[in-house]
Amino acid sequence: MKNFLVSSIVIVSFVAYSFYQRVFGVQTTPIISSVSPKISHKIVRVTISPTVLPTNTPIPSQPSSRTQSLPTVTAASTVAPPPTVASGYKDGTYTGDAADAFYGNIQVQANISNGKITTIQFLQAPNDRDRSIEINSQADPMLAQEAIQAQSAQVDIISGATDSSQAFVQSLQSALDKAKS
Image (cartoon, rainbow, N blue to C red):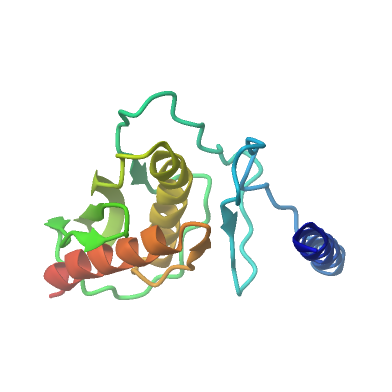
C-alpha cells in the first residue's frame, strides 16, 4: 500500500510538472541528478512560485567521505539579478547564531557588499552521519543561492531537508539582523 501511495504521488507530481512546463513554456533543470537505491527519501525542492534555473546550473556532487568542506555560495553571473530593492544592509561580514538542525547545528556567515548579500558561507553544518552530510551537501548550496537571489532569509523550505532549511533561515536571519542599518 505504501509503495502504491508513493508511486501515485510521483506520477501526479510528474503530470503536474509536465503540465506546468507546457502551459508556461518554462525550461528547468532537475535538482537531483541521481539517488542511491538505499536512500529512503529524496531531496526535492518545493517551490510555491515558479523558479527558473539556468540550464547550466551545476548539481552538487555526493561527498566521498565523512569530512566535508562547507560550501560558500557566491552570486552567479548566469542568474538574473533580483529587482533593485533598498536592503538596508551595512557592508561587512556578519556571522549568524548557530541554529539547531536536529542532527547538528547550522551556522552561516553573510558577506554584504554595496548593501547586498554577495556570499554566504557555512561555518557549521551537521556532519557526524553520512546521511546528514549527503542531505546538507545538496540542500546548503540551494538555500544559499536562493537567499542571495532573494536578498533575504525568506527562502523556500527544501523537502527532505526541513530541519536544515529552518536552521539555515534562523542563522541567516540573525546575521542579517546584525547587518541592518
